[in-house]
Image (tube, rainbow, N blue to C red; front, side):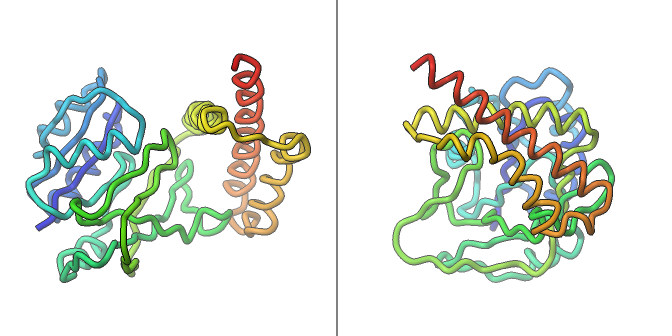
Length: 248
C-alpha cells in the first residue's frame, strides 16, 4: 500500500488537481502545510487529503517529517504543482513494489502553458516512490535528494508526471529569486568557493547550454524565455552568494 505526501505553502491554485489525481492511487494523502493563508488547507481537505500543519524546515527535512504521519510503508512524494497522468496512475497501480527498488518518474514540465520537451528540462527522471524505512531525504534546503544505505535498484516508470512549473512569467521570476537565495545559502553554509570566471560567465553559459546545446530552440519562444530567465537566476545566485560571503 502507498501513502502520498505533498508539502505546501499557499498552493490554492494547484492543490485540487494534485490531490484528486493522488486519490486515485491511495486513500492516504498527507499534505504537510507550513502556514498557508490562501485556502490551500480547505481545498485539500475538501478533496480528501489530511492536513498536517508543520514548521518549515527546508525541503528535505520537511519531507522527512511525513514518516510520522503516513499509514503505509511506501511513500509517493509529489509537489503541489504536479499531477499524475491517467497512464501513470494505472502503471503505479499495476506495479508490484519491491523494497529493494526506488521508483523514478519522468517529469514533463509545462511552462506558461507550453509543454517543454527540450532545454535540459525533459526528459527528467526524479526518484519519487520509495520505502520509508530504508530511504530518507537529505538536509538540503532546495534541490533535495534521496539517500539510502546499501544497494538499491532505480526503476523507471514508463509514463510521465505533469509538472505545472510556472504558470506565468511573474511566477517564474518570483520563484527564481527564491531558489537563487536558497542556492546561495547552500553554497555559503557549506563553505564552497565559486571561481571568479564561473561567477562572471556562468549566467551566459547557462543560456547557451539550455537554448543551443540542450536544443531549447526547438521549444521556440518558450525555450528562449526559459533560458533567459534561468540565466538570470544563476546571476542572482552568485550575487546573493557574494553578499552572504561578505557577512561571514
